[in-house]
Image (tube, rainbow, N blue to C red; front, side, top):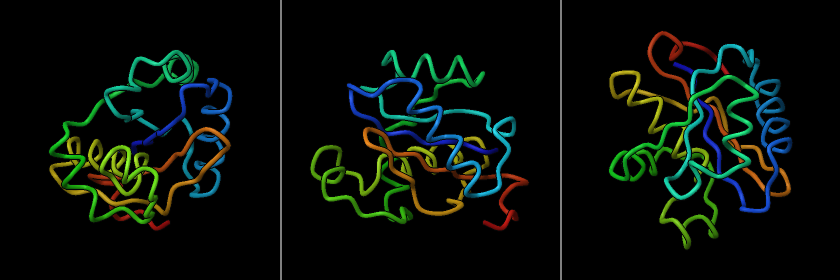
Length: 136
């Protein structure tokens, strides 16, 4: 499974999310068509920007359970003080990607690399299952 995790500010637009996902895919050599889901926090899952971006990309939005997000936290590559203070996670995008990929991959997942950030969003890619052997 290939999962993109997204964290974003309420004023973010869909185009910014779609562009950022494209940049992360390019950075890690992932075809956008290979993405399976977008993972985010519960309070952001139904935001207009993310819903529109998911529709544009043909992806389903998933909200990993809080216990899975907390379990993923030690494996995040980024340590954002802001995310830690606001959400109790070192990186929203990385924790969401890891937690969702692990759910779909039998509990094992890894990031392809650290998150990428735009002006109002963050994005990370995690893989699980047969994609675990993929090199970043």
